[in-house]
Length: 233
Ligand code: 6PG
Image (tube, rainbow, N blue to C red; front, side):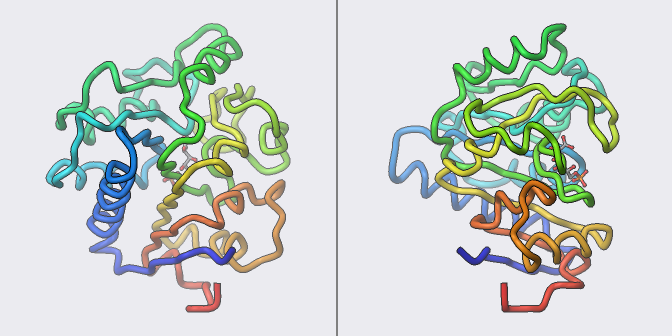
C-alpha cells in the first residue's frame, strides 16, 4: 500500500497536522462510541498538540494512550507525558480517567509494560507516530529485539541508541499494524534522508522501523520532503 504523503510548508505544518488529527478523531467518533488515540513523543508533535487546543473536538469522548515513553518520572523534561500534558492535555476537557500514562517512572518496566498491555485497546483508533533520523518510530529502534516482536503489544526497551539514552516503554509492530488509522508527523531537514529511505527505499522495517507505518498518512514539511521524488510514493 502506498503511503499517503502530505507535503506542507513549514509554517503551516502544525496547523495541517492538527486539522488532520481533528478530522480523524471526528471520523472515529462518527463510527464508534469513543476514540482511542495514541500519542507520539519527542519534539515534533508539541506544536501540533498545542494547535489541537483551539479545535472543535469532542474531548470527553477521547481516550489518550502513549506510543512510547522514556524511563523517567512524569514531570521530567524528557517525559513524553509531560510534553503532551503541557501542550494540550491540561488545556482541553479530556476526562482524567481517560488519560492512560505509560509508567516510565516504574522501577519494574517489564511489569509496567504488561500492565499497560492490559488496558491498551486492540485495535487503537488512531496512532500518531514520529520518526527519528535513524529510522526508528515510537521506541522501536533499528535491529532491536522490539522491532521483531510479533506477540507482545507493549514491551520495555533496555537502552535507547538515541537521546535521551534511557530505557523505554513502547508499543510494538502488531499495535501499529492493527491500528485503524496511523498519522506520521515528520518535520525538519535532518529527516530528509531517512524519510526518502523509509518511503521510497526497499522494505526493510527491521532496519527502518518507521516503515511499519508506511500505510499511514504522512504529514511532512518541505524541509523533510526535500529528497522525496514527489508524487511517486
Ligand atoms: C520519542 C518518540 C520518538 C520520536 C522520534 C522523533 O520518545 O522520542 O516517540 O519515536 O517520535 O524520535 O523525535 P523528534 O520529533 O524529537 O525528532
